[in-house]
Length: 167
Image (cartoon, rainbow, N blue to C red; front, top):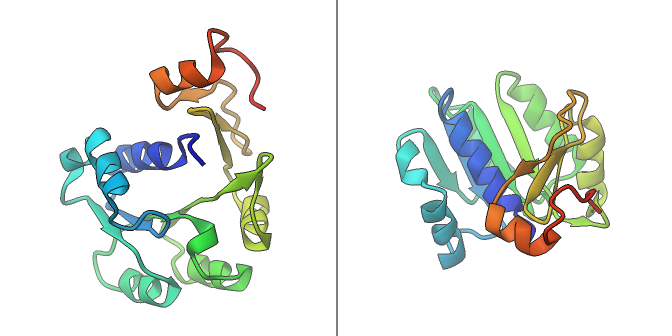
């Protein structure tokens, strides 16, 4: 909590809007003032018409994704509030092979919280660890340099030593 997961997910979603429609399933924050603030801070109005926000569980998401012209990218924030087990996650993936699913997870000691989140991590092609407003790729595709999510907050978290290894 408070390390930049949602900020990074939103920045990634905004980037992906250049190529496809993105559906952001905001289960953790819903449409709270803090989430609305995130939308504004990340300039999501720039991708209006390509970025959509919802707060639904798997049955409603499955129905929405079956519709013609539905978004090709789905961000689920967070796994812990998406009331599913790994079978439902696999079913969602298998029934939507042309869609990209991005799962945001709460963590304890750099490990996803909960059995489903851990299984998703092991099956994912790309894992991105967020710590102190830095994102570090831990997946199969490399990415050795961290991505700074928010320079001021990262500096506050890490101090002057911006090259400090992620904990």
